[in-house]
Image (cartoon, rainbow, N blue to C red; front, side):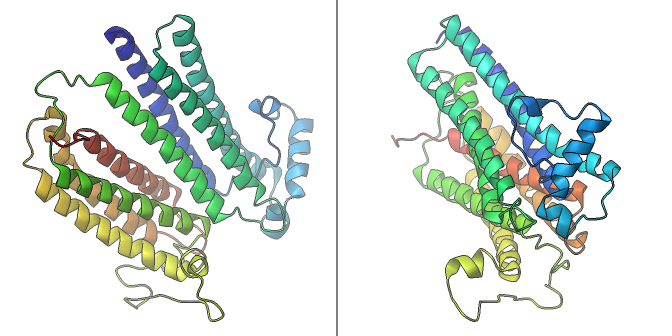
Length: 350
């Protein structure tokens, strides 16, 4: 691709990144307000518009009244209350369609004007497939809460979240490659194999923490132990199933163990991030790394504080929408800061 075409594509993809960030935050709001099961059909085209008259609203409400969530949890809900939760799920789905159509439009324009080389064409195809898969995962998640269980599967919810993070990370890496000029001596890749391995290990640890955060959210586990630093007066809380010691049931379905693991991983992420910062802050040769590495301790500290506040403000099955959204945004910021720093390392040592 020509340099000015690379720059054009890079800035358009930054716009798409912003769209995805908003989509992730809308997903958090949808989940925390209990809105995710308010729309019981997946109408890709006709579902773009909300109900436009009283009759349409009554029909949508009637469909929701047939769902397990309404029958078991919200049987006293009014039409006005239904409109509130419908709005967030509708906006979440609409915003996803907007993002996909935006990327499809960018791809079509660049392909029609022959501004894409073969490598970037392949990347665009993969990007669109990832985006479509993300939407499909979202619907499979919703379907899991439309049978007998009034809640969505926390496994599918976490898969939906990880798909969004993968989409964002793929696009972020691509944007950085398009916009950064590595011919400039001040932007040369860093040759530090040991620190590169440490950085990728830390990124994997952050991702694991996000997975348990998804389990926490899906199982509404925060309110079970809404105290800190102890868990309802105890430092260690791990409860194993009496009949089985399957890993999935101990660490994937038990609220107590999941919250304990999420806390421990949070401490490990905090310590490991500070350790990495201490080891990497003196690296020189790449202006972007030298500038942004110093933001890492602040980001991880804020994220830990947001996690504590989210926990302390939880009550029963409810988590504060404000703090829950901010905590999820903090996790996204920390992970993608690490990916941005990882990009600055040389893949093959010299």
